Length: 285
Ligand code: F6P
Image 1 (tube, rainbow, N blue to C red):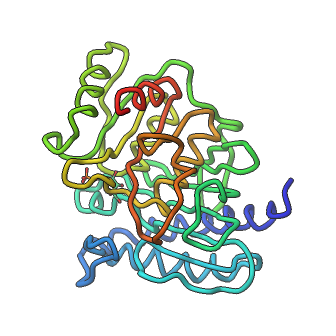
Image 2: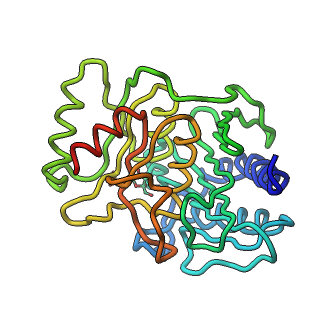
């Protein structure tokens, strides 16, 4: 138990309590709002609704001192304590075609922007056919089914399966670097691996956590820093996958070691089974 255990647990509980509300509000909020987020992407009414709910509830927890969201430029000061970075609705472009989406929460013991090694907990909710939640803290990952705002643990001390089975890579294929394209070719020639890419990082990462494998949103020719945000996406997911015995990488080393300069900065994201990430780093360097 660390000195932050109670706050981290309260954050997890609050996320579980809020997830069904976010989910049940989705059908009426498929329309786009006028605004864009700080990364230049269109915001949906559903993004805003989830953000407002999470800010109000997570910011009210004693022991939480800062709340930052992918949807807003600046963070909010909420008192003394841990800093929370949230992607309220990850993959929200999947709302229109009714595919999976997620909510991602990183809990940092340092003011934001902070390096991933400052995380003391991270969780994501997956809005799939059922609502599940993966939460990492104190060196363990637990998967829960969330019903009526309550969590029920279904997999404890979750680790990535030994034999990887799936892969999913984002970005337009012609925009991949030559080295990454060569690596993908190698992966695709492995008969034990199957393509799984759904356009929502949490849906795709949860496949990797379940079956073993690799998910990447790589550095692109047109965007060497990739697409995903370090504070809100790369770090929390990297922390969960590493806690489950896998690896994360920005192409050179663990994502958790990247020194951030800006709240909304992007990072190439490669996460999954250790051997596949080791091979990826070998191919890129
Ligand atoms: O927030 C970014 C995101 O929606 C991720 O959830 C997902 O992995 C990625 O963008 C999908 O991007 P693309 O549409 O380029 O495949």
